[in-house]
Length: 540
Image: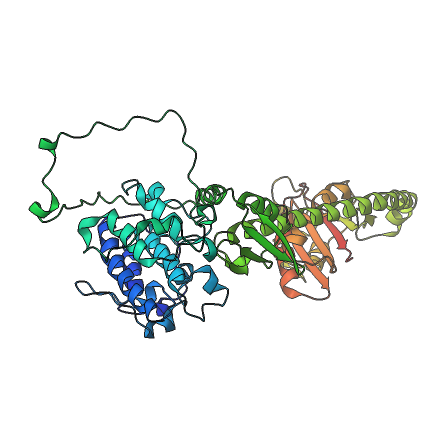
């Protein structure tokens, strides 16, 4: 048996595989990465066509799929009426039903002309491992060792329009038998020319689901000279039949989604015929070629919920249910969402820029007022100096002292600790050094507890902290919606937030905790004095 790469598509439901049928055997081989040899296909389908001729002549009609054909190695294959319960439940069985039957949702059995299509679709799947439909490839593109005549037989059998499809199963049986004469007994004699024309209809392979052959490139090489008769191998009847040797199986390379999508796109575009109609707003649009349809999906003209009709196969489904087109509709949807997200970010940035410019004017006025009354405030405060400054929506408080408490480390009201002059970090002078993890208010209370004011030295400007806290990216990343108001109080010393308090309106403990954690992890301009800033992000 020849082997092929394992199929990437999966069946809708393993429970929909009827045991003891040709479908069950096809899926078992697919799981092993195998397809059928040509002689195996001929051995199965030629007797089946003969049976179909007899039963159609009796007036019987069938829903013909691999699930309605019994299969057991070494035994004749038969059609089973009971198997019709499974006729179209498996994904790939639907592709084997003639288009005129799909129009009635496969509820009615087909005549001989419908069976010709089904035999062609079953033969194609057995040989290639792929289903008939959009993006299908010519058999010899997948298996070059197949004879040239096979594409002519399949091209005629797979004509979508029954008015231009041959309906002589006996002639089809003869044509299939001639592809590998030693594989089965010859069917009853029939006129094979009926596959090319008939008294009632004109065969038109341009309407076949088989994609047209690609034009030949370069000069055509001459055929090799015939082998001398004395060097030819003995005929099959003297050796018991020639044995086809299966090529060595090669493990498939890892599947790359990008490469897989590009390959699918190339397969779809290889068929230049306009055959696809999209139903949008109760109107038909098209027909389009595959490449035109992909362009319409990329431009968002059509979306995954719109219905797509393949006029060749008469199959109509939502685009999201076509495995050949759904990936492109999904990719277009993702691109559309990314563009919308970028526009929203740009809107927020522009809005914040306008708000910042407005606040800058307010800041100038506030700073002027603070400078005017600063000297009086300095004279009136005995224990510590406090400077209130609006900084891009912040209130910044600088707490500084040159004095301190002599003695051992003490606990402050906020639960943190401060250190006397002899225990301060190098470079901090007599200022207490706070541990982290406190609330903003606790840090403030701890810092000023029992300290004596002996003078105020200038520290970092309030604007130095605004450049860090005013970037609202960390607020958005914690999931705060645009309608939420967020209040942040941060006590900063030696370049880190030693105390943080966050409140939100409406209240949300999870978002508040996330924002507080982000602030504690930020780096600020370093100064040994304690600076307290308050920032408010107003909801819109």
